[in-house]
Image 1 (cartoon, rainbow, N blue to C red):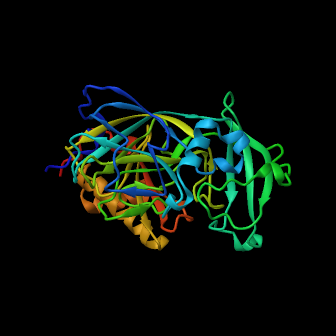
Image 2 (cartoon, helix red, strand yellow; image 1 turned 45 degrees about the horizontal axis):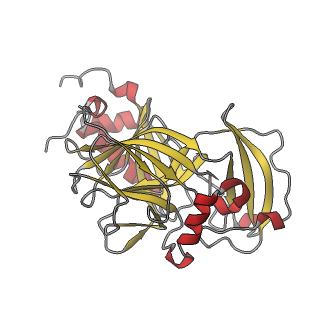
Image 3 (cartoon, rainbow, N blue to C red; image 1 turned 90 degrees about the vertical axis):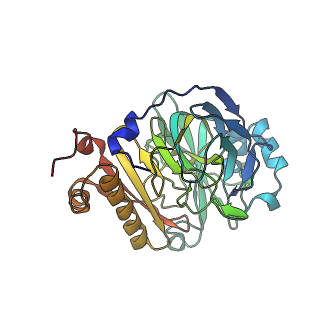
Length: 362
């Protein structure tokens, strides 16, 4: 199959018939802690269909009076703790895309992301980067979200007693000692999905914690409304799921979590059989962003470098020598996160650099 030039990714034919689907986060439509190639689909859609889906944070129990309603309480009650494994994220789906086969790409256009509640939680966790430096203490900070200003501010904080390990922990904070937090500080709200992806072609359950070529727990705050992700299909139907919603996160996610908050997500899924790419590819209004993962941050950096090299050479028509030079002078490498077992690096390059007509003649 001939690969497309990068310009064609944005301008490809998208005249698909579309239907609107609703995907509620219910016991029947959720799976906790895993992707699976054998998971029964929650819904089936055609290429171009639009889905309104509920993405639920598994940290809602950090302040259940503020971050849970009766529908979410039913999910907590309906999925037993021993069925929340091997990962931690509460996933909605999977979505089966008709005609999707291994080797295809799913183009997921994120159209809108709206907070379900006016509160979110950040946990300084035992898997956080500075856990030992804080005396192995875990602390929860509850943020209040202001939809008018799109800012978050500290509502209160408390120390978590014990070790935060059970997915979907309910902390019973009304019984805890609360402290004021972050007086005078305002954090920009930028809703996004921490975890979303297709089912890997592997037997059994695959943990939601490490990201990979299937997507998963990428934790890039740019995966929000107005962005498009391209996921390499690995099993029939793709089996795409979403979860781990955030309303704000910095690159690195250093404490172990973002501001974790449930989101109502509207997205369009388009089946692409006209190009291939080896890893999750992110398109924003201003950038193309490639991701690399590994337990070793240096190898994650190299993986991101090699995939960006492929993007520029195979999809833009640059020679590899020219692409390597451009990467050094025109792209930015950033640590996405260091707390998900597998560490992440992303590299972004401005679309304006590449969308200036045809490649130079040789």
